[in-house]
Picture (tube, rainbow, N blue to C red):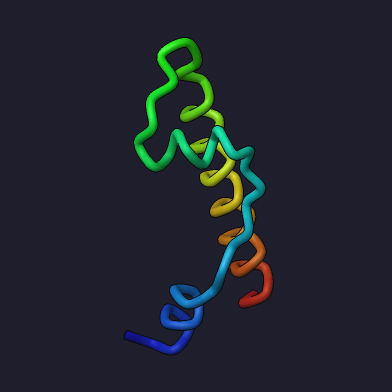
Length: 60
């Protein structure tokens, strides 16, 4: 494994979630509001995308 990949794996991202979104990701079910889990997953995916895009810009 090369050094760039190792550094990327150890990099941290920060995503701001509401308490209910975080609970939904741990498995707590909100029968009246499934959108909580969906929104939380989308926030994490956006954070990953932003981090990967920034990392690629710094490499080039």
